Image (cartoon, rainbow, N blue to C red; front, side, top):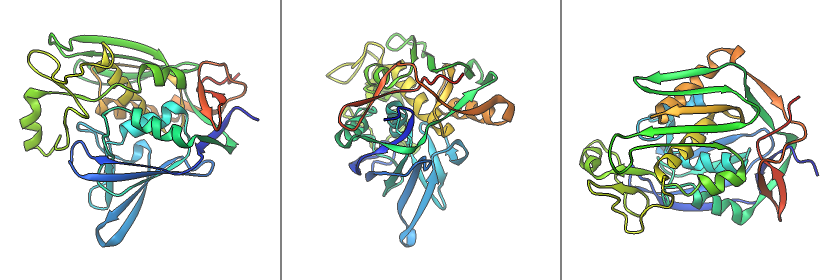
Length: 314
C-alpha cells in the first residue's frame, strides 16, 4: 500500500466538554472526509437553525487574543481551535469535517492528548490522493517588540520555540524538535495550557477564562504551581507553546516543509508569520512527496505505519 497518501478518520468520533473561555458545554464530532477536503469546521446551532462551513485556513482567522478564532461573530465563528488542529496535524490527519455545536472547541484537559486518544479509538484510513506539502522557499518573519516568529526553508517540519516570562517559576525556556507523529505524541501532545493566578480576575471581567479550572489549566501562583499533581514535563510551558504553534501553523492548509522559530511568540505572531509567508507567491511552493525518510510514524488502521512529514522531494 502506498505510504504517501492523504489520510482521514476510519469512523466518526465525539467529544464533549466546556469551553475554556466561554464556560459553555459544547459537543464536537470529528467526521471522516474525502481526499482534498482538508480540515473544515461545521458550526451548528446558529440563530434560526443555521449552520456554517468554515475552512481551517489562515484567511479565515478573525481573532488571536488568548486563542485562535476562525469565522465571524455575526455569521458564525469557532474559537480555541488550536489544540484540536495541533492534534490533527501532529498525527498527520489531512481530511476531517469538524462539527461543533457551540462558539468554542472544548478545552478538555488543556492539551491535545484527549483528541489524540479519540482519534486512536477509530484509527486512520488512507485516501485516494497523494499528500501535498507546502514548501517554504524564502525566509519570512513577523515581529512585535522583542517577540518574533519566522519560517525558513528546510526539508522537514521543525520547531524551535523560546519563551521568557521573566519570573522565577516559568522563566526562560527553549526547546527544539523535528516534528513527526512519534515525536509529537511523546514530546508535545500532553503539555497543557497555563495561566497566572494574578490575571484571573482581569480575564473574567474581559469575558475570558470562564471555564478555566485546575482540571484543564496549569495555574501559576506567586509561590509556584497551584495544581496538586504538578507538571507533566519539567518544561511544560514551552512545550505547550510548541503545541499551540503546531495548531496555528496547521492553518497553512498543508503540512509544512520548513523550520519555524519563535521567541516570546503566541497566536498573534503564529498567524502573522503565515500572513507574511502567503503575502508573496515567491515565498513558497507546493510539492507532492515521493518516498519518505522514516522520521516517525502515524498509525493507520490496525497497526500499519505511515512515516510522517519528511518526504524526499528531489
